[in-house]
Image 1 (cartoon, helix red, strand yellow):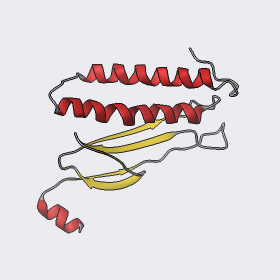
Image 2: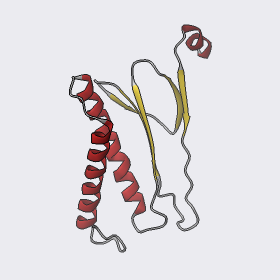
Image 3: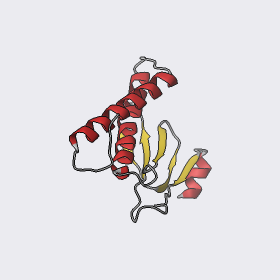
Image 4: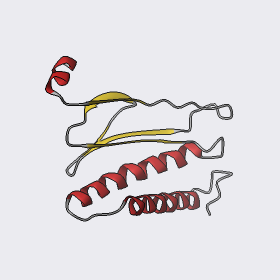
Length: 133
């Protein structure tokens, strides 16, 4: 099958995601994200794989678990969930002719992620060490 892909001239993208728990926590608080999307649909990919570049976009992200801070696994998961939600939406808007600059997309991404983290931190009072700003 690889031979067929190479023969057709379609470029392949291969990825592999790996994180480490570090020296402070017994569990890994990092979050990894891999997406393939176009104007119609989003596919969550695994930590490793390969796909044709075709007419879709890809996004990959690793969010660090905050170096042993309390609730790092929640913060890192919220960050990649926001990326998974906002990047494909931005792509879809662009495909419909509603252009947003890269800076606008990043500004919205950081703002929405910060709001989600603050909301989670405010609602979750039972996690010591988590202080929303």
